[in-house]
Length: 588
Image (tube, rainbow, N blue to C red; front, side, top):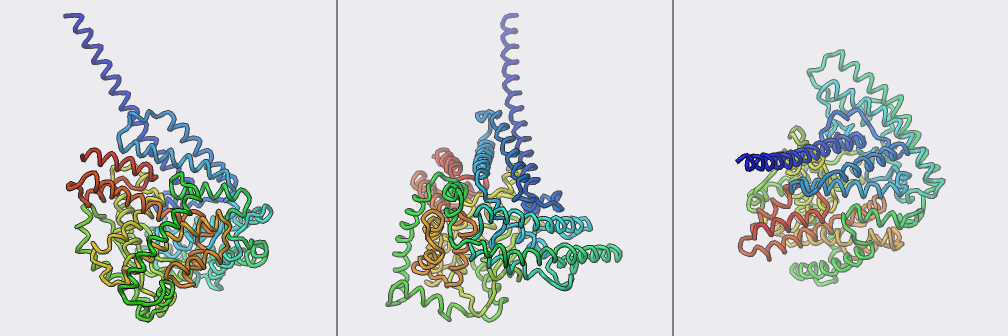
């Protein structure tokens, strides 16, 4: 009896120790996830503001500096070591995804630090100077509700003034090492600063929030903030805008390169291979991606030929697309407000059908807005996420530089991609999932996120659009656009294609205007590899959907498939495939 009792006690103690060990591992991993998110936000305070982490709203990273890169290196080493101490077998399924995401980010982050991309701190498409301009407008992620909010951005404005000096220091280092922007891109950056030079502070973009101060502010507070913003603009920002504009127009433009691809720069070929890996979250080589792109272009061209026959056009596909570029019936507007109303009508048409494809829909509010004037000329339609608490809506921005030449060909699929059920659904559902650690709620992987958005374009007929063959052609043309990206991005950055070669290839295969295609090619030149993410991700999601239909047969439910794809948020494609295969096997 006593022996049995002793054995029972030993077993109970052993079970307790195992249980406690598991609990400790779980608690440690939960804490690790939180610390990881906090440290990421400290390194990237603009991203933190976009994510609603307002404790960083007065900060600004000098991301091009050697000291910042040293901080990044220390961050990656810290978490690489921390992950090594986690027993992955003791984690839940969702925690294993968190582990895999951190492992991926740390690995690719360390790899990217090998390359001197910090010597290119500016381009016309993305970067601190453009994010700061968006925030300054007062209607973006930077909050302007309390006195502290205003003083936070005042602090950030002061740091941005110093950031411009740091950018010029590293651009000069880039000139010394032959690591500079192409001339075609430098000339696009110049007006972005030049347009911020105003003689009166009140006319400056950075004064915008002062004009909409809350009525609850006292007269003294309003006067103080107005005076401090005006002083920061006239004494700090405008002189810096003048300085960098002159520098770009003279020294930097003269030193800018005539080549188009990053492979022409020191370590350029290796840099592009790493960027392709980072943006696709795969091991696909630039050569393999280029070949895949050529294959997809050929497939889509045959589908576009069918639409050409359907509408009765007798010439070649190239002639057909040239006619569409300039078709007056696809340019019906005279005012920007009409363009926005047109998108609102698309929104209303798909609403009755959303429930047929999605059992889970976001609570985050949604709005359609015109792109701000200061960046409208070089902008594409885009989605800016709302806040997780719903206090800031998700915003679909539409650039309308000239309503009279605005072509509606792709508006239905653009709305599905950028807004609903594309980015707005994916990002909002991810942010609203309270079961996810914060670093995943506010994370981004282009291959998953852009892949999902491109995939949703194929849902148009089920959602009640593409009833007009021209709008269906617009969807095919946009998918062709993403297939072309695989060809021209790799062509420019790994095969030595010129800007002009890439423009001509695009003109030969899609129905965009010369101006739009030129802007797109220059975008690929500015952010090598980003354009690869869309098609690579879309093809993986389509592959998973077909696999699920085949495995599950009559039990396949599209609503459940979409729920499983979306519920855990963005992740590298290999992790998504593992998750979906586990779900399929569990269903069977």
